[in-house]
Image (cartoon, rainbow, N blue to C red; front, side):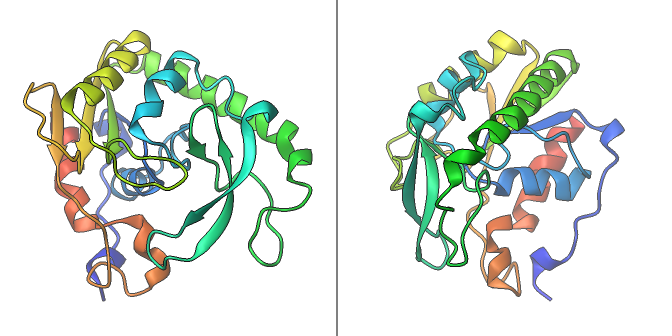
Length: 232
């Protein structure tokens, strides 16, 4: 059995701060729920989000996330098997919405995907408003991010510096003054002391016996970071 196949021993949610994923991919939200139990769904849980998009998304409360003017079909390369796959990108925010629209038998985005925008908009309005209410009211909120800046749709790493993360932290504090920020695999040194960091890397055969699970990440690397944050 690979390390990741062993479900993490969960800590009761009442004993921890509120954890909120900031992406870049769904790995972060999955690991938080795996370690602490099911969490409140947030808008960044299942998006692919470059770091540089977060301040604008926070300031606009993701108002345009499903706006037709900014939605178009796009392609990306699967991070583990390298296959070229179809998705939908929001060009205003530069994020992939992998899970919002139906797919055809080949795995591509459905031909009639635009007919689903209204339903997606209703869902996102609910999820986003509930999340902003929750982070405003919670006494302690830890936002967790993995990776820094990257280009879209290529998902290629871009140069990231501490100022990029501090801009994100400033944006968070405008809506959540009690916000804490933790970053896995930041891609640069963070020396201000304002942000918790750790290296977790990517998962592989040593973590999961099934390659379809690689997206979940290296649990044995995530656990020390998240448990440390929960104890502070």
